[in-house]
Structures are given as C-alpha cells and as structure tokens.
Amino acid sequence: IEANDIYSHTVLCEPQLGRRGLYPTMMKGDSGLSARTMTDILTFSDGDRDLLWIADHIAQSVLVCDKTAKKLLDHGLLALRE
Image (cartoon, rainbow, N blue to C red; front, side):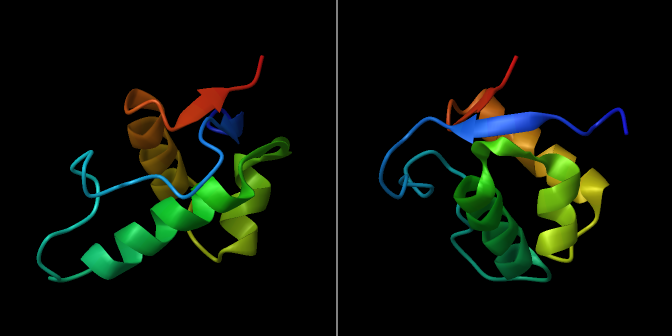
C-alpha cells in the first residue's frame, strides 16, 4: 500500500530506453520481462491509474512495478502525481 502511487508519463511518443541505458543490450535471464514491465508501466501511467492497478493488470508484483517506476522516475520518464 505504501508503494501505491499514481504516475503520469512525461513523453508523448515512445521514449528511447536504449539511449537512457534502460533497455538491455543482451538478453539474459529476465531482462526481456524487465523491458516489458517498463513499457507496460509507461503505457498505463496516465495520471489516473495507480500502481496497484497497473501491477494487477500486467500480472506483475507491485514491488517489482514500484522498483521499475522509481527507475523510470529517476530518468525523467515518469512524474509522480501529487
């Protein structure tokens, strides 16, 4: 519940994750799932849906989504809704 924030994306088009060092250069382990989680969070972060809804909708742990959202927030791709 503490991680249940509402985010909105800050870019209008698809962001360049590779340029920001967020997209894996080599697929290993769960790197494909990590990239998919990032794009899913960016897709559903519209300023109305909370992180718990997003995690449930993409069938991912809310803790994983929180960690991913914080990473996207640090790179300026998401903004925290007040």
